[in-house]
Image 1: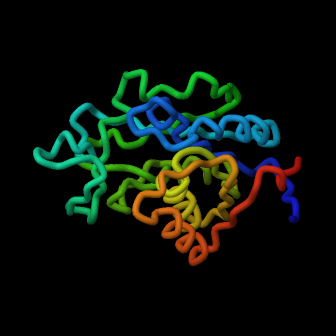
Image 2 (image 1 turned 180 degrees about the vertical axis):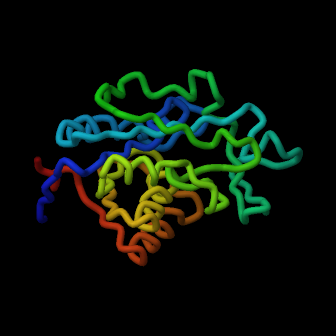
Length: 212
């Protein structure tokens, strides 16, 4: 297993380590809080850290409760393509939307909120789910001279995975730190995202491979 040197132009992108995605939350990822230890282990190696935060209005389009007769995890057609319906989660201003209380990344330079547009879901840290509406993260990284993106957090097969693919799409080499992520694995979503990684050239790493 080869190691990778972290340098001053690398950024650690920590995706959605929020209460609702951790055990006891409204959309809990199995073993979700297990990402905390590896994230805290690798964070000191990075001079630059960005956090994302799912941040939905109460009546968000992606919530099953916004579609009478529909249940969580059903799929509907939206103007931008298939949309999975989720339990209400990460509602703006609620405890569920807060970062996990044990997440201690005080050196993070940016908190990027996503999913706040009521009629448009947002998995990726770079683009909303219509694949055209930018979050502004691409411009931020370029303006700051950051060149490689390392990803950790929740969930591996949704928001982490989409962010990694879009990092490559935006021209940034992307590395997913697998043991610092946890997956939902809904209807084969882990296999699907890993096939996309292979096509895009995204690289899977373990935290022990990172050195500074």
